[in-house]
Length: 261
Image (tube, rainbow, N blue to C red; front, side):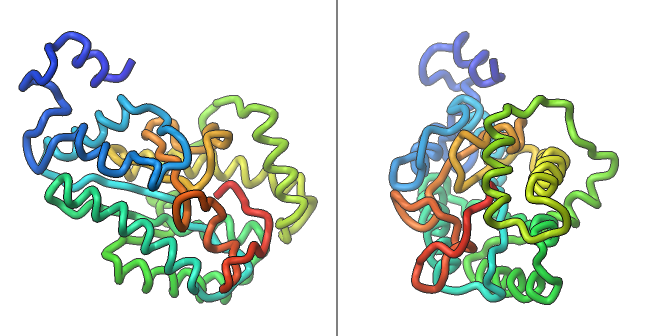
């Protein structure tokens, strides 16, 4: 049971000691309600109590609510209309949080250069694509970090010993048979990808310990996402639309099988 659940169960409704009550910048419950709607979410968050707890932690310290998400790379070398649509959608969510809290939330896009290299993309294409994403993101006030740098700077981070369900591994292998262009077999690529994720999610937890983890995937991939952060399962471009922008062409058509990240 999370701390917020323990405290709330022992306190009367609307108690001033409730960690989700307003201290600075807004009420955590109301802030969560502002974005935890079907206008943005594709399914319920991993834990509503944990989500409340993390948001309360930020506002009670006078800090903006923090969101962190992975941003991948597909076949295109330059960001275009799908990326713009996705960032606009994220901005609409950010505006809801700003209105409820009085502070613009912090959004950090973790650019998955590690996965792009594994998938066989050349360095020039990786640099070109992520450079254009960074420019677009900056116009919305979003921060960007390369995933490789986050892992490197998280000294001593290693994979945990969590058992990954067989159905998740099967999904990764099936997807790799369509999109993997790196060295070796698709199965080997999928397993390498899995091992990388188990380290990278620990790096995310290390650098963003009081953040909401956003993903455009569903909960079927929860096992490879940060386990210490509340997970917000979100549509990608608009309500009812979940394909990742980096796997769409300029007209919005699917270019490739979407990887989990």
